Structure formats: C-alpha cells, structure tokens
Length: 457
Ligand code: ARG
Image (cartoon, rainbow, N blue to C red; front, side, top):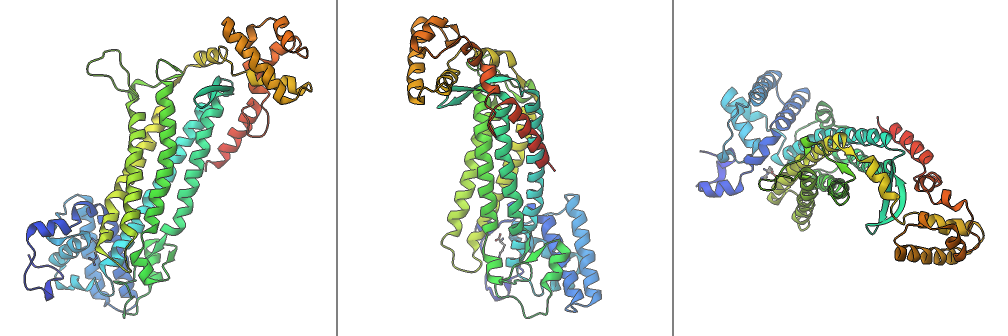
C-alpha cells in the first residue's frame, strides 16, 4: 500500500518494520479527538479563506461521516497507515476524493497529535475530578455516622491515642482534596492549544490559531510552536498527580486490608466488594483494596517511563514521543477504576463500632492523659511522663490497664493524683478534650466535616 508520505521513497518497509513503528493499535483511542481537531482546523481554514467554502463543506461532510462511523465502531484501522492521523486522512480521501488531501494544509501530525492529547486529557481530567469528589462525599457520609465512634489512633502501628473514627476517615478526605486541587490546577496547562504550530516552525498560511482553539474549547494557545509540539510536561504532570493520588489510595487500601483482618476486625467489607478462595472455604479477601495498592506500582512506572523518555530529547518532535500514550491511557483507566471501586468499597463497608470501642478500653492509649493531668497540676511534663511510664509498667506486670489501678497505687506513684483521674482516663473524655483546632475532639471533627462539605461543589 502506498504511504501518504511515500513520494520520496523508492521502496517500502516490510510489514514487521511497519508494525514496530505503528501506533494505531493504541492511538485509535484518540479517534474522536482527532476528528474534532480536524473539524476545527478545516473550519478555521475556511474562515481564513485558505480553503474555499465548497472544499470546506465537502471535507466537513466527510469528517462528520467518519465521526458517525467511529461512534458505530465501523472504522477499520490498518497498521500500514501507521497512526490515527494517517488512517483517518486516508479514509477521508477514500470517502470524498482528492479534495480530502486539502485537510492537511497548514498542519502537521506533530501539532495534530499534541492537540489530540490535550483534548483527551482535558476531558478525562474533568471526569477524574468529578470521581474524586464522589468519593469524598462518600467519605464524609461515613464520617458523619462515626463522629462518636472511638477508635485507636496509631503511630508506628502501635496504639498511640484514642481518636474519633470519623477523624481517621476524614484525613483521607483532605488528602483527596489536595489531589483534586492539583488536578484542577493542572487544567491551566492542559487547556492550551498547540494546533497551528505545524511541524515545529508554524506555517506560511495565514491561519488563525486562536480561532481553531476557540472551536475546540481551549482557553489559550501555546506561545511557541517548538515548545507546543515537543513538550509533554502536561502529561508528566498528570502522571505525577496521579501517582500522588494512588499513593493516598494505596495507604487507605493498606488500612482497609489491615482493618478487615481477624486481628483488627474493625470493619467488614461488603460481599459485593470481596472475593473468596478457591480452596479455603472460610476466606473473604479484600482483593479490590489489594489491587488498588498493587496498581499504584504501574502508575509510578508510567511516570518514570515518560520522564525517562523525555529527558534527552532534542527539540522539536521526535518519534520517541509516541511512547507518551500507552502510559497515559493506562494511568487514566487505572485511576478511574480505582476511584470507582474505592468509593463503592467505603460506601458499603460495615464499621464494627463495638469492637473499636472495646479496643480503646483495653490498651494504654490513655497514658498521655495521665501525663497531661500531672503536667496540668504543675509537675514538669518530663517527670509526669516518667511517673506514667512506671505506672504503665506496673499495670503490664499485673495484667491491668490504667483504669484498673486502685487509687492508692496511683497516689503512691504521685500524690497529685486524685479521684477525678478515672474520668480523665476514660477514652471518651480523652477524645472529647482534644479540642484544639484540627484535633480529634468531637466538636472539632464536626467543624471539620462542615468545612469539608463546603469544598464539595
Ligand atoms: N504517531 C505519532 C505520535 O504518536 C504522531 C506524530 C507523528 N509525527 C511524525 N512526524 N512522525 O507521536
């Protein structure tokens, strides 16, 4: 088959060479963006009197037909036509005749592909922002049900201080809030049109780049044609934002996995988000959470892959850049899938309120309360810490917890301790009293949830 660029060639490549160079297997995902880019381009060519109205009408008619065929999945792409741009151009010419060859006036595949990628990412990032928000709402709903659910808070995965379970859940809300802001901010750099930059240097035709950008709904145009066709920083940024998002999801997934183990037993995932074992009949596995944790690796890999692809490239376009696509598509599908699954998993999980409550009543996570109590009575905190540590040790030896110690043992350790200590040591009081801004005190958690709701547009 003759190539659309075949004029200066005396012989063609063998099929296996074509196969190596072709991107059609994956860039066909950009079929709508590519057709929309062509529609905007040819309209602009008409508006600028570069093509006659008749030619523009015929070409537009052909593009609209191609779009319809694309919707019906009736387009047949071929490797011989290398990529989405050449495939569609060839189909257009086959459909409407040689006038179709006028579409590529004042344009190159280099600005074409960059335009497609900007259009694609703009749509998908909007969708991702929306999905983050849906997930955030679900977190807020669960949190609202568990403001007064006591739970152990950890550091080093050792019991640290009692907290409101809602406070723990809301920590992820805020991580996602920053992820959402990062994606929103990146829109400024995605929402720019490279179209009309040509191969690298612009074009001799009197085109109007702002007009084609307007047709495509872009807010801005690249100021430098070489920059426009040769950078993929907007994709790197997307992959980086996605990596951070996946880091957050992965940490949350790790907790879900721990919490649903028999050892923790803090939550139970719904059957519809769990799987069984082919051999062990008792098993109910948190596969979805594990997969999200696992998929984080491929998103990081995609980021590293593109950074490495770009790092040594001279300006302007290089074929290396064809490698930007699969990682980007894969990342979009991975984070869209992970967000949807996570939302469903959290929406349907059962929180074992009693188990959480019992847990904080059988540990030393109220030890800080005793130290703070003594410090508030004037004992230097360092000494209060020492006295409390000794009492914890005494309890461990006797198989007690602090609340089980008789008053005389407590007073023997330090005479400042009085009867009111038992109230102070209760986990409920410990949480309630942590009323500093952003703390786990119930009032603060309520304020936080109100603040969070305002962020949901
Ligand atoms: N398939 C190419 C890519 O994905 C499109 C641009 C090709 N440009 C070129 N001069 N070979 O990057």
